[in-house]
Length: 487
Image 1: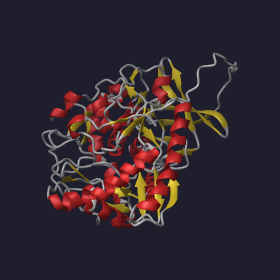
Image 2: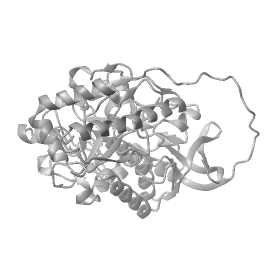
Image 3: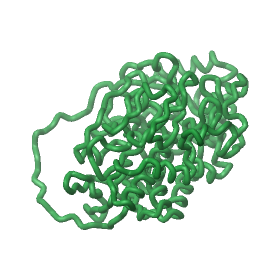
Image 4: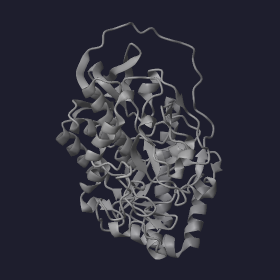
């Protein structure tokens, strides 16, 4: 399994689980062989105002926002559902949407989507608890992935099927044209600008033409293949570059397990030590949206490439084998897991990082000082209480040179430190919504996406419920907006 690396200095990370480097590589050497592929005409499947490639959090938000702005919005998704890693990846713990004072920062479509989740598929602190520093309350929620640095946050865990359903209904209500089982393969280029995308499907190779294309692949597949510049460097002390397949076990008693962790830490520590000694990697179970379902977010494997098929295959193999080894040991030794069964391994591989766009205005470590970008499209919670909320600029999703395309989501323009939180699901909703609105405006006005009027963009985003700050729009106080959820 390789050697574990510790968490970043200063306690920046919320997941303090070990990160494991790759062991012996199965990556193949290049054969040097090629086969000819004849030129061909690709049928145009559809023509749109806005084409979104990728139906994860960023792509879903972009498609819905564009459609609500009046654009004909087509969304291509390679799987059979929306939500990406938040659903198919079983990353159903939604990271912090509040600032450290409890104020709700990630709003707009994200807020509306979570409001639609049925109460029995939603677990998180009630609104009045957001921002509390009461030690006992924070300790209780810390075991349920909703309190960090001794502060309770709005970090709900939701049922993935209910999140899929709510995402689908919001897309259909907005009038989004959904195309499932369609893998975005390459950009359509005209005069050096993106004019749509080619996708692979059971119907073969087809194309969608669009005024503006949104690359929401998460890995920057379209902008990279269009020739846009990007970065690949990572912070090796952070999990932001690791990959894994998550899984869930059913038939468990999570309150009993969490009580054991809290009241018998020495026993729990010895359990974890034995597991690591036996299996190399061994992870703790996380609370989910139900007391009878346990969520496992590991193993977090470093040193693998999210754009190399042999690496992806190896990570899947390691993850699935470790799932069954975890099941055996948890059943035998962990209170509350005696009747556990393997409920589901994630259909989608958990990729955190592949490429990051070279954008007009990237988010960097220097931006954590509370400055408000003049082209702000949203506000992200910061990594720790000592940092102010982080302003996300429109320039972070606009390629430095390439036209016809916007790139929201985890491959936006930022440095490795900022990527550690800007890659999270709420931030993908935030940047996706902005991309959809901007794409719709660009198509409607007949201008390049980089030339969209920032004032019009910000006004339209506010109209869709997003938080955009200026002198007249201060941060909301704790308790404004969002839902009150039972714990």
